[in-house]
Length: 172
Image (cartoon, rainbow, N blue to C red):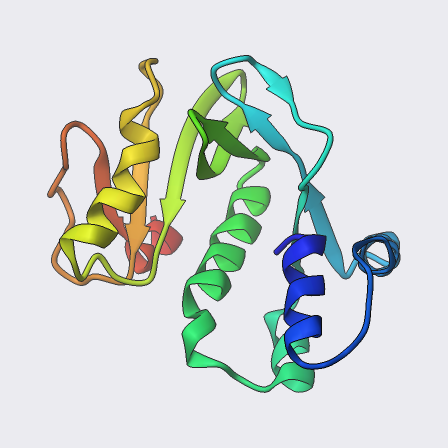
Protein backbone atom coordinates (compact mmCIF):
# COMPACT_ATOMS: atom_id res chain seq x y z
CA UNK A 1 0.00 0.00 0.00
CA UNK A 2 1.12 3.56 -0.61
CA UNK A 3 0.21 6.81 1.13
CA UNK A 4 -1.73 7.79 -1.98
CA UNK A 5 -3.84 4.60 -2.06
CA UNK A 6 -4.62 4.90 1.65
CA UNK A 7 -5.62 8.54 1.24
CA UNK A 8 -7.79 7.66 -1.75
CA UNK A 9 -9.49 4.86 0.20
CA UNK A 10 -10.18 7.17 3.15
CA UNK A 11 -11.72 9.77 0.85
CA UNK A 12 -13.97 7.06 -0.62
CA UNK A 13 -15.16 6.44 2.96
CA UNK A 14 -15.96 10.17 3.33
CA UNK A 15 -12.96 10.78 5.62
CA UNK A 16 -11.15 14.00 4.77
CA UNK A 17 -7.40 13.53 4.76
CA UNK A 18 -4.28 14.45 2.83
CA UNK A 19 -1.47 12.31 1.47
CA UNK A 20 1.06 14.14 3.67
CA UNK A 21 -0.97 13.31 6.78
CA UNK A 22 -1.08 9.65 5.79
CA UNK A 23 2.70 9.73 5.17
CA UNK A 24 3.23 11.06 8.69
CA UNK A 25 1.14 8.26 10.20
CA UNK A 26 3.02 5.69 8.13
CA UNK A 27 6.30 7.09 9.48
CA UNK A 28 4.94 6.61 13.01
CA UNK A 29 4.03 3.00 12.21
CA UNK A 30 7.51 2.48 10.82
CA UNK A 31 9.20 4.08 13.85
CA UNK A 32 7.40 1.69 16.23
CA UNK A 33 8.26 -1.31 14.02
CA UNK A 34 4.66 -1.97 12.99
CA UNK A 35 5.34 -1.38 9.31
CA UNK A 36 8.14 -1.59 6.76
CA UNK A 37 8.79 1.01 4.08
CA UNK A 38 10.28 -0.09 0.77
CA UNK A 39 11.39 2.02 -2.14
CA UNK A 40 10.65 1.64 -5.81
CA UNK A 41 13.69 0.73 -7.89
CA UNK A 42 13.94 1.49 -11.61
CA UNK A 43 15.36 -1.76 -12.94
CA UNK A 44 16.33 -0.35 -16.31
CA UNK A 45 17.84 2.92 -15.02
CA UNK A 46 19.28 1.29 -11.88
CA UNK A 47 18.06 4.04 -9.55
CA UNK A 48 15.71 4.43 -6.59
CA UNK A 49 12.63 6.60 -7.09
CA UNK A 50 12.04 9.27 -4.46
CA UNK A 51 8.23 8.93 -4.36
CA UNK A 52 5.55 6.27 -4.03
CA UNK A 53 7.24 4.08 -1.44
CA UNK A 54 5.16 1.08 -0.42
CA UNK A 55 4.42 -0.04 3.11
CA UNK A 56 3.94 -3.54 4.47
CA UNK A 57 2.72 -4.30 7.98
CA UNK A 58 4.22 -6.81 10.38
CA UNK A 59 0.87 -8.23 11.44
CA UNK A 60 -1.97 -8.41 8.91
CA UNK A 61 -4.28 -9.09 11.85
CA UNK A 62 -3.97 -5.37 12.69
CA UNK A 63 -5.77 -4.52 9.46
CA UNK A 64 -8.47 -7.10 10.08
CA UNK A 65 -9.12 -5.80 13.58
CA UNK A 66 -9.67 -2.26 12.32
CA UNK A 67 -10.93 -2.65 8.77
CA UNK A 68 -12.55 -6.09 9.05
CA UNK A 69 -11.62 -8.90 6.69
CA UNK A 70 -12.22 -8.03 3.03
CA UNK A 71 -11.93 -10.95 0.64
CA UNK A 72 -11.18 -8.57 -2.24
CA UNK A 73 -7.85 -7.70 -0.62
CA UNK A 74 -6.46 -11.25 -0.58
CA UNK A 75 -3.77 -10.41 -3.18
CA UNK A 76 -2.48 -7.59 -0.97
CA UNK A 77 -2.41 -9.88 2.05
CA UNK A 78 -0.49 -12.53 0.10
CA UNK A 79 1.94 -9.86 -1.14
CA UNK A 80 2.48 -8.80 2.48
CA UNK A 81 3.13 -12.42 3.53
CA UNK A 82 5.67 -12.93 0.72
CA UNK A 83 7.41 -9.65 1.60
CA UNK A 84 7.79 -10.71 5.24
CA UNK A 85 9.12 -14.12 4.16
CA UNK A 86 11.71 -12.50 1.89
CA UNK A 87 12.90 -10.37 4.81
CA UNK A 88 13.03 -13.45 7.02
CA UNK A 89 15.20 -15.18 4.42
CA UNK A 90 17.66 -12.29 4.49
CA UNK A 91 16.82 -10.51 1.25
CA UNK A 92 17.05 -6.76 0.68
CA UNK A 93 13.73 -5.95 -0.96
CA UNK A 94 12.49 -3.12 -3.15
CA UNK A 95 9.57 -2.69 -5.50
CA UNK A 96 10.73 -2.96 -9.09
CA UNK A 97 9.66 -0.68 -11.89
CA UNK A 98 10.29 -1.43 -15.55
CA UNK A 99 8.79 0.27 -18.61
CA UNK A 100 5.95 1.79 -16.59
CA UNK A 101 4.97 -1.51 -14.95
CA UNK A 102 5.47 -2.63 -11.37
CA UNK A 103 7.33 -5.73 -10.27
CA UNK A 104 6.15 -6.66 -6.79
CA UNK A 105 9.58 -7.48 -5.43
CA UNK A 106 13.16 -7.01 -6.56
CA UNK A 107 14.92 -9.13 -3.93
CA UNK A 108 18.70 -9.12 -3.54
CA UNK A 109 20.83 -11.44 -1.43
CA UNK A 110 24.62 -11.79 -1.71
CA UNK A 111 24.54 -9.52 -4.81
CA UNK A 112 22.17 -11.91 -6.59
CA UNK A 113 18.80 -10.57 -7.75
CA UNK A 114 15.52 -12.43 -7.87
CA UNK A 115 12.23 -10.97 -9.09
CA UNK A 116 8.80 -11.89 -7.70
CA UNK A 117 5.23 -11.22 -8.76
CA UNK A 118 2.46 -12.19 -6.32
CA UNK A 119 -1.18 -12.74 -7.21
CA UNK A 120 -4.10 -14.62 -5.73
CA UNK A 121 -4.95 -16.78 -8.74
CA UNK A 122 -3.91 -16.96 -12.38
CA UNK A 123 -7.53 -17.55 -13.30
CA UNK A 124 -7.73 -15.68 -16.60
CA UNK A 125 -5.53 -14.89 -19.58
CA UNK A 126 -5.77 -11.21 -18.60
CA UNK A 127 -4.31 -11.95 -15.15
CA UNK A 128 -1.55 -14.08 -16.67
CA UNK A 129 -0.58 -11.23 -19.03
CA UNK A 130 -0.72 -8.63 -16.23
CA UNK A 131 1.49 -10.67 -13.89
CA UNK A 132 4.02 -11.98 -16.43
CA UNK A 133 4.44 -8.87 -18.64
CA UNK A 134 6.65 -6.91 -16.19
CA UNK A 135 8.95 -9.91 -15.76
CA UNK A 136 9.12 -10.59 -19.50
CA UNK A 137 10.34 -7.01 -19.98
CA UNK A 138 13.42 -7.59 -17.79
CA UNK A 139 16.50 -8.28 -19.86
CA UNK A 140 18.84 -9.98 -17.42
CA UNK A 141 19.43 -13.56 -16.35
CA UNK A 142 18.12 -13.25 -12.79
CA UNK A 143 15.55 -15.80 -11.60
CA UNK A 144 11.93 -14.68 -11.95
CA UNK A 145 8.91 -16.12 -10.15
CA UNK A 146 5.16 -15.65 -10.23
CA UNK A 147 3.68 -16.85 -6.95
CA UNK A 148 -0.03 -17.65 -6.62
CA UNK A 149 -2.47 -19.82 -4.71
CA UNK A 150 -3.04 -22.04 -7.75
CA UNK A 151 -2.54 -25.70 -6.80
CA UNK A 152 -1.25 -27.36 -9.96
CA UNK A 153 1.56 -25.13 -11.17
CA UNK A 154 4.83 -26.53 -9.81
CA UNK A 155 7.30 -26.86 -12.67
CA UNK A 156 4.88 -25.23 -15.08
CA UNK A 157 7.01 -22.35 -16.39
CA UNK A 158 5.78 -19.59 -18.66
CA UNK A 159 8.32 -18.31 -21.19
CA UNK A 160 11.18 -19.04 -18.79
CA UNK A 161 9.48 -17.54 -15.74
CA UNK A 162 8.90 -20.00 -12.91
CA UNK A 163 5.38 -20.42 -11.57
CA UNK A 164 5.15 -21.54 -7.98
CA UNK A 165 2.42 -21.96 -5.41
CA UNK A 166 2.78 -19.54 -2.51
CA UNK A 167 2.41 -22.52 -0.16
CA UNK A 168 5.35 -24.26 -1.87
CA UNK A 169 7.35 -21.02 -1.73
CA UNK A 170 6.73 -20.62 2.00
CA UNK A 171 7.67 -24.22 2.76
CA UNK A 172 10.62 -24.38 0.33
